Amino acid sequence: MATTSKQYKAIGEDLWKARTEKINAELFALTYGALVVQLIQDYEDYAEVNKQLEKMGYNIGTRLIEDFLARSTIGRCADFREVGEVVAKVGFKSFLNITPNVTHGAQAPASSPTRTSMPPPQANASANAPGSNFTLTFEENPLAEFVELPEEALEGGLWFSNVLCGVLRGALEMVQMQVTASFVSDVLRGDETTEIRVTLVKYLEEEVPVGDD
Image (cartoon, rainbow, N blue to C red; front, side, top):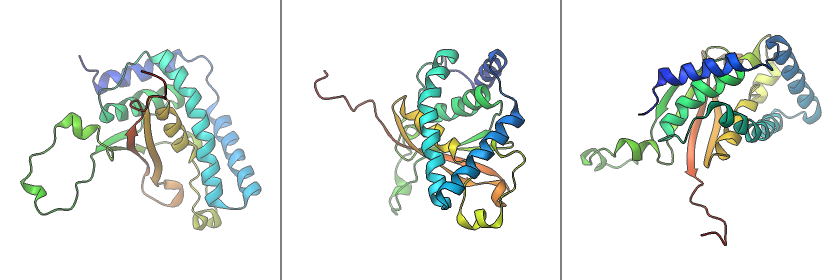
């Protein structure tokens, strides 16, 4: 029987409660803030800082996924929609004690006047198609506590919490999903919400190394 959204939320709660090596939230935020400041000083280019934060996050994600899989005992997701539910309700909860809201999107249909007469694709196929996506909306972001971006950073296009996008990309790649993850809005930049969109590029499991059956 498929796991429900409510059950995933309960799993995330249990994993967070069982985690013994919790870090003080204020210390965590200040340490991350100091890292971002150091990168800005080192590169003096906000686009490059975004890139470096994403790269750091990717390396973190490739390691976190092993701990996540071992502790959660969650099996393979049925489709990309379920991936979004697990990421939001179990992944973020178990590591950061937050549960972003998740909304699901499908592959954008090709613009063709005849498309309207075609039958809709099967739900499972649509949810696994390249271009399928989900959006995470954060009511709270522990990385951005005590942060106010200067005008220069806003104009330079800094995504302060871009490490999260890298974590998502790295973790999902380790379970055979190539995705893109990027911020679409951030309250630190004056937006009403903080949102990350994760889009499926392709599944990697069919790419068998040369010499393997």
